[in-house]
Image (tube, rainbow, N blue to C red; front, side):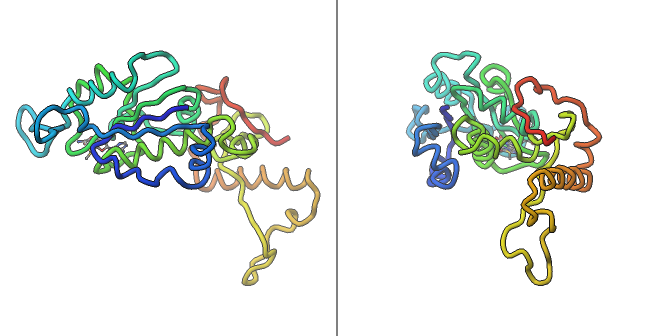
Length: 249
Ligand code: SAM
């Protein structure tokens, strides 16, 4: 899968995708991350990408022309397996189902806004959709693009070694009926006792069935405590058909 990131701060991404799971995926050629300087699509001596807002007011707005030209060159042919996303505080809230949906694409273009934002014609006539990584305002789309690349890349087949590890994670794990999405269960490692705090005995028992039962119950409890909204929501998610769910029997 190819990610294309369009930004006025390309150096922001230096080394960002060199580490861990994503770094390994890049080195193995499972994903490609291309970063483009938006100023390459400007033609004036100052390489201007922004201008004052029509109607007056504070701040500057990213001009449409460089963004349209860049996207048309990066993705000359649009198709169902290619998507152009504008990172925006006003967009659809990013979550694991969207990451899963994006991981099926062959190419994903991520447009990073700055300043007061991006000329609205980009959202209306160029991008397939606007995506927000949370209900807060960042100073630029770069951090949001990095979050999207990371979350999507690890769902690309082969990127995370064992398929079970992504299927048994928060927001993919499901209860016995496969209806409610759960958070991951708690994890512990050596030592079995640390400062008087013992890990749950069942995890030391070697009894795999008992361990699985405990894990699912613990995942349920933790979800109910930290994210009761997930339990309340219940029911199959909108994209359930595509989900490689991991349920414990
Ligand atoms: N005036 C805009 C508003 O109130 O919605 C905020 C612009 S923000 C300072 C500049 C850029 O940061 C945006 O164009 C967008 O690309 C990015 N951005 C800010 N918050 C974001 C969020 N929650 N998710 C994704 N991108 C975000």
